[in-house]
Length: 233
Image (cartoon, rainbow, N blue to C red):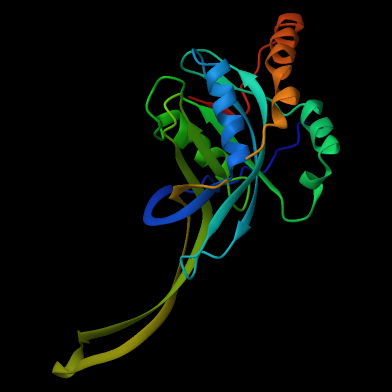
């Protein structure tokens, strides 16, 4: 007999108006420019490593990019990847990425198109945001225009006091107060303002061979059906 798996409810995705910040250091920016220059006609995607400063509550939340690792070369309108051992190898080679407080999000390009959260991109926010506390997505393009967002699972409990009256027998009117809780949970997402910082060129040699590795692995891969993990467009 097949065991039934518990299906988690999908939280409603709600766009909030508060805007927080994402900082792109010069070294990370140069890596982005390098990829956009060398993979200019199709979309590419990868892992964005970042750390967090501040908090939502006082509006000081800042996402600070630490590094990125390219995972895919897609088509002119689409890119996707499955997490592979290549990423683990890269992290071992860069042990600072294994430190506590380093998190993983998504970076992907819109190549020659404007950067915005398309239907596919908001679907990704929903899918990934439902599976983790926060999901960070950075969208870039060849023109150097960036858009970014972050999710959070937000649960609130409202205590409601309801005053009531009603007529009853003997022409009396009864009144009272009932108190009850209303619990609500949503998946919120917020835009992130882009801020840039200061760079070296040490990364170029290491990054040069990565597009070739991806193309070779795709060429040698045995085609299989897959529902797609981490799809972006």
